Length: 107
Length: 112
Image (cartoon, rainbow over all chains, first blue to last red; front, top):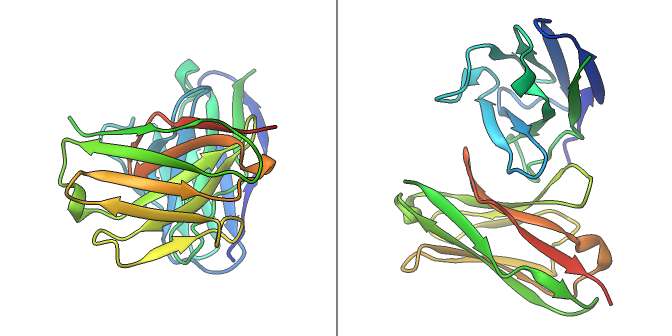
């Protein structure tokens, strides 16, 4: 099985900061990676798919990059509504594993 | 609009069975692969499995393989998750999902 390791697991940043979350795959997954945002008590929301394609309706402050084993999710300017837990998921091979999550808070 | 609505959750004893449903509306149900994802209380997302658009291909996480079965009725636009021999660590909110479209989740609690 492919393991996804996110770093950091917890992140505290200031409003307006540029924030980067990394997702590392245990083996190459091409660009078969998505990023989700989840707020407490809510279903996950798709932000990015195919590693770098922004989902319709998602703020352009979010961007994704990477391929094979290293991927990043970047928030260009942190806003209060970005407080959430972020997950990566790979679709290269079964099982379609998730990373363990990165909890983002405002400093 | 496009929607997925899960139902069937509840409290069940260890070793018992439960069937979850996910009713779809607003899109061509039979055109899409669908997945189940769960989340234990306070924990991260855990992929359960998926089923192809025509129901011919199913894939499962190792933790549920042989106990859970995913099926679908394209005539009813409904996805199912049959869960047998439930364990306490199956306690979670269960979501059905189609890419960017997710249901609200249904809580399954396995407890005696």
